[in-house]
Image (cartoon, rainbow, N blue to C red; front, side, top):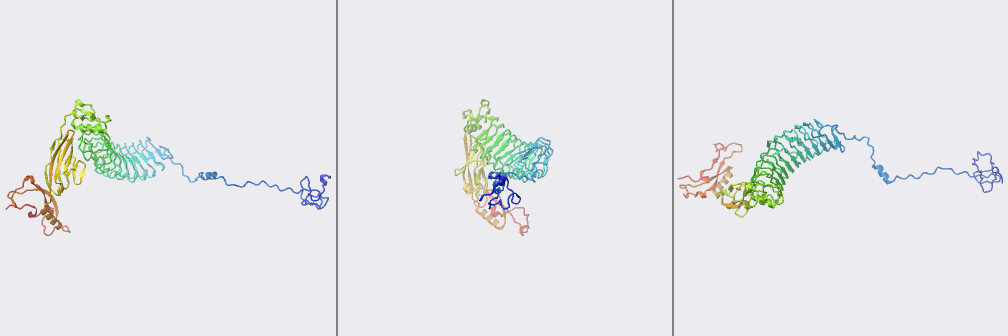
Amino acid sequence: MQTPNNLQCKPHLHCITMQPTPSPISNPSLPSSCSTTGPPERKGCPLAMPPPPLRMPPPLPPLLPPPLPLLLLLLLLPKPDLCASPPPSCPSACTCSNQASRVICTRRQLQEVPSSISVNTRYLNLQENHIQVIRTDTFKHLRHLEILQLSRNLLRQVEVGAFNGLPNLNTLELFDNRLTTVPTQAFEYLSKLRELWLRNNPIESIPSYAFNRVPSLRRLDLGELKRLEYISEAAFEGLVNLRYLNLGMCNLKEIPNLTALVRLEELELSGNRLGRVRPGSFQGLSSLRKLWLMHARVAAVERNAFDDLKALEELNLAHNELGSLPHDLFAPLHRLERVHLHHNPWRCDCDVLWLAWWLRETVPSNTSCCARCHAPPALRGRYLGELEPGHFTCYAPVIVEPPADLNVTEGMAAELKCRTGTAMTSVNWLTPNGTLMTHGSYRVRISVLHDGTLNFTNVTVQDTGQYTCMVTNAAGNTTASATLNVSAVDAAAAAAAAAAAATGYTYFTTVTVETTDGGGGGQGGGEDPALQTARPRRTCKKPRSKKGTLSDDDDDDDDEPTPLPPSTLEPPSEG
C-alpha cells in the first residue's frame, strides 16, 4: 500500500484524503487528469474525498404567538398617560382621605372657606371655625358634594346663591351660628336636599314660604330658636315630603299652622310654653306617628284636641302641669301604643277614672312610663292604672245649656248647642235617622264642633226631626233633645227673587223674625211666639250699566241698598 501522499484512484471511488481538500484550481500537487469533484476516469489519480457539506447554523424554532393569558395581561396593563392630571389637592388647613372625597377642616380658626378644595369632595366638614359669611358661588365647583357641615361657626350671613352648584347636596348643617333670618333664597337649586339643620340660631321670625325652594326636605331642625317671635301661617307651605320637624325649645305659646305637612311623621314640640292644647292644632297631620310635648307647660288638653291624629303611635305628655284629661280623649287614636304621662300633678278623681281604665287595657305592664296620683293625699303616689270606681264618689255629667227647639227656613245655617259644666266630658249627637255624630265625623253639611255644638251649614227639609245630645263621663251619661223644624222657602219670595235675578238685581239675604200683629190685615190673628219662624228678608242693589254709570231711572247713591216694594216682602200695613 502506498503512502497517503501517493494514493491511487480506484475505479468508481472518490479520492479520499485525511487532509482538507483544496479546490482543484489551488491544489497543484494533483495530476491535471484527476478530478476532485467526480469519480476518477483513469488510474494514477490520487484518492480524494468529496467536499464537506456547508455547515449552516441550526434553524431557529418557529415564532409562536404568546399564550392567551399573557396577551390579556399585557392588554390590561395601564398605559402611561402623559396627560394625566396630578393627584387631588388638599387644603393645607385640612385633612383629606379617600382621594380627597372626604375633607375635614374643623377647629382651624378659618375665617373663610378654603379655595383649593378638590372637586372630588363628597363630605366637607368646616365645623368650629370663625367663618362669618358664605359668599355667592363659594361651593360652585363641588358638584359631587353630598354633606356640608358649617355648624358652630360665627355665621351671620348666607348670601343669595351661596350654595349654587351643589345639585347633589343631601345634608346641610347650619346649627349653632348667629343667623337672625332664615336664608330662604340661598336654598335655590338644592333639588336633592333631605336634611336642613338651623337649630340654635337667633332667628326672630319664619316668613311665608320659607322653605318652598326645597320641597325635597325630609328632616327640618328648627329647635332652640329662643328669640323666635313669629311664625307665618304659610311658613311651611311646600314641604310636602317632610317627615320630621323639630320646634322644641322655641318659646312657642301656641302650636303654629302645620296643615301643609301632610306626610309629617314625627313632631317635636317639647320645651315650649303652650299652656293649652286646643282642637284643630294638629289639623292635616293624618300621617303623624310620634308627638313629643314634654316640658311644654301644658296645663290643659281640650276635648277633641288629638282627633286629627289618626295614625299616632306614641304620645309624650310627661313633665307638664296636667291634673286631668277629657273623657275618652284617646278614643279616636286607634293606633296609639305608647303614652308617657309621668311627672304631672294628676288629680285622682272621677275625671281620670276613664284614663285608669284605658291605661289598664292599653299599657297593662308598663307602669314606669305612666301617671301617678298627686292628689288627694290618700291616693298620692298610686299608679293611675290601679284606680277603681270604689275610690271615688262620681256623678253623671250635667248639661248646663241644653239644646232648644229651632225653626228655620231651608237654605239657612243652624246650630243646636249642648254645653256642660266641665270639659272633662265627651259630647255626641244622635240624629233623627239614628246616626251617631262625634267630633271629627262629618255628614255632608252636618258636623260636631269641639265645644259640642251640632252645626248645620245649609239645612234642608229632610233635616227636620229630633236631635239628641249625649254627654258622657266615667259615672254615666246625660241626654237632652231638641227638634229642628225646617220649612220650605216661601213661594212668593222665591218668585220675587227669581224675577229680580232675571232683571239683573243683586240680592243680599239677612234673617228677620216675621210676626203678625193682632190688628193686622189678612186673618187679623196674632201668631204664637213659640211658632215664630225665621224667614229671609231680601234687599237689592241696582246694577251699573256696562259703562259704569247708574241706570237712567236711578238718582240714588249706588252704594245704598234699596228695599223692594212693601207689597213684595213686608206684611200689609194696618188699615
